Structure formats: C-alpha cells, structure tokens
Image (tube, rainbow, N blue to C red):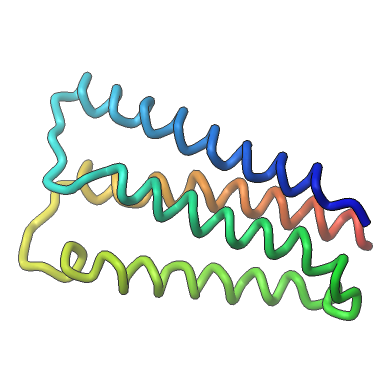
Length: 132
C-alpha cells in the first residue's frame, strides 16, 4: 500500500493544470481586451486546493477503508455539491452582489472550476476501474 507515487502525481498534475490554464486564460483575456472586475487567481486557487483535497482523499480512502470502495461514486457526487456550496460561500460577496457581469466575466469564473472538475472525474474513473 504505497500511496506516495499516486498522491505526488495527482498533486503535481493539479499544480501544473492550475499554472498552465491560469496563464493561458489570462493570455486569452488579454487578446480579447477583457478586464475582469475580480481576481481570476482566486478562482484558480479555489479550484486547485479543492481538487487537491478531493483527489488526495479519494486516492487514499479505498486503501484505508476498503469497505467504502463501492460507495466512492456517491461520495464523489456529494463532494461536487459540497465544492459548489463552498464556492458560493467563499465568493458570496462577488456572486450575490448587485454587479452585472458580462458573459465573458461569468464564463471566466466557471472555467477554472470545470478544468479541475474534469481532472477529478478522470481520477475517480481510474480509481473505480482499478477496484472493480
């Protein structure tokens, strides 16, 4: 039960995804002359940290508690809703303000969440295939 390699790999991939897509996102916004009224880095940090917690939890959980292997899919669905709730809680001043955001500004809030969500799904699928 050596988890060092999968945990390190997941952490490095999440950091790499965050860095690459953050700078790519900023470059595209710069090319389109879009200036966001909020700090985009905060959304990428939230996405990376929450994905890191979720991925590391779901990588270690089946090894520590084998009886939960059958419930990983349901637990992952719950983690998605918890992540969205936490996002709304942390960014409530921005999300629930009277400010009217353009389509690009709203999309820029969601892109980091979906980037990391896709990676989380890939990790969960790999874990479920391994244990089935």
